[in-house]
Length: 401
Image (cartoon, rainbow, N blue to C red; front, side, top):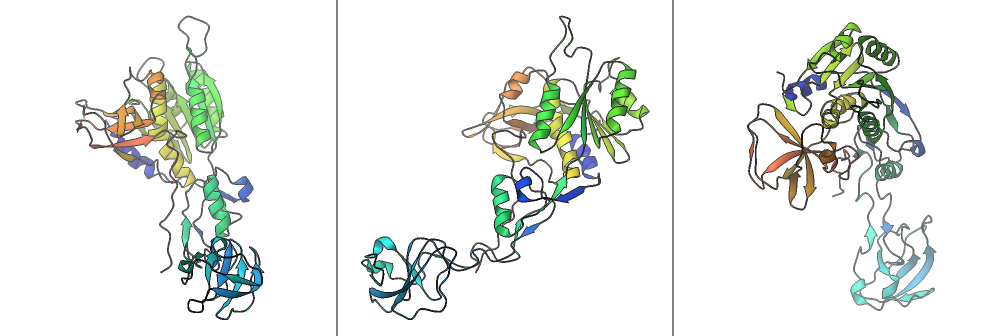
């Protein structure tokens, strides 16, 4: 049986067509930037006062200075000050060359002349953010593939990128299957998979139509055919295992999808299916809700990343709170909660126990044969849209020297 790592390699080898557009920042929230963003100018763009006060041209330990002008943010002082001269300056305003900034609290607040009452404030280069000390023009500040959160949008605005190129997400359809969903009998159940997947995609800035197919080949084929007429990716839930009514693999094949993998050595989510037809993909997720949650993160998300040009989901390494031994043959992905000190595996009753999965923050990876000592590092994948958030791709900034 194929391993999860082998399945990831197959997904990583896919090269779907990516579509992009340019949008204004006001319409870019939550989108994926499709180009590297570099500073259009030094940041700060000039030597900038970091507080209200006086920009002084020092003259030894002289404490009294002639005030030549007032410089507020958005204005500048033309020319240079002579030693013993000053300008009154506001936070964010450019400093005349060769000055130091003394906070107003250290002076008598004079207008035509000012006296500095605290001699320790008379030191060169104080209270100034120097041109380029945050970043030099041309420095890479946001990498392609980063989601545009509010702070990243602000960064693009500051960098001089008012109309970034962003990815156009793939079109998606979700098909839930099963006669048991929302039926009238005592054995019917409520559909949690449709809402889960729709919200999962929303966290990634994507939308999908949701269809339902009963457990008949005709209804399922009709739903897949309809979804394929307008979708890059079709996601099905249920019907991918080995039962009499697990019809998705055969119907997908009848519709022209070539199977890239089906059944992985993992738990939950063993029956997961990935098929391709040209530039279209069909992702067949199992029907149990925790299996859907897990395979959406472990299989669907990496495929979506290929369409969007984003990095695959990022795993964290955190200490495991209690020792754990896994003697099974399949790789385990168990719900786990982040607590003070590290990861705590959530007790669960199998792949139908959505209550346990909802009490977690993500999935812990426990390969077959794992023996984890208390305090050892474990691989952990946070839920999309969970309280741990999404980690942006930000490069180390180039600092002035």
